[in-house]
Image (cartoon, rainbow, N blue to C red; front, side, top):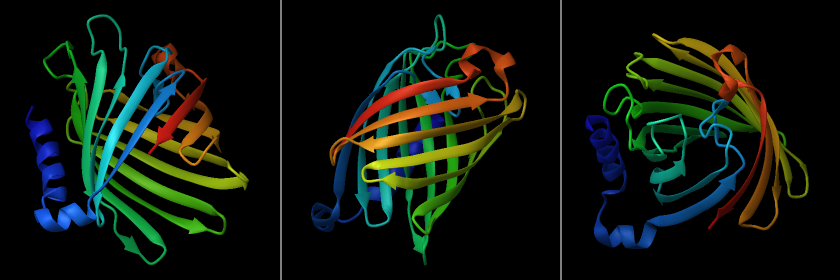
Length: 230
């Protein structure tokens, strides 16, 4: 609960500007999607089953805040839904775009070993810049207390995307998750996204990790997703 309050306070601080100016500058966007498998950092969050997802984002200048939700399945008596809150700023320095923010991953009906054992907070620092037609980025996420009371955790990622042809883009990422009291693993993904319309995109993505011994949800997989943004 304390972590949720911190995340909500950060979101409020990001958008708490003068009412008159906000009415002119505040921008809202929405997204809704469906995927054959909700994959997060190479790991299935739905026991390899489909998920319905959606969210709302608010931007004001370089500031942003939002909420996003998806169904999840971690096993018997575990959360049935994930509800994330996030906020931050996206300044630019020359050709480099930065993203500095905080995220709260909340889980409905969290019945883990301890109350709220799945819910946690992360701090994000990311940068990206164009290189010719491509875009490359780096990101670091830090959590002071990871799910299951496993201590602090850090996730590192390098990513990139490049247009292949009209409406078709290839993208991928290589990441490494380190958890203080629960080991670590590497993950990677590669896929293509096709712009069906200006607001609708179809993504086909291969994901894998180097720790299949952790269980089938860490195995290699291909997920197909359809997402609308408006």
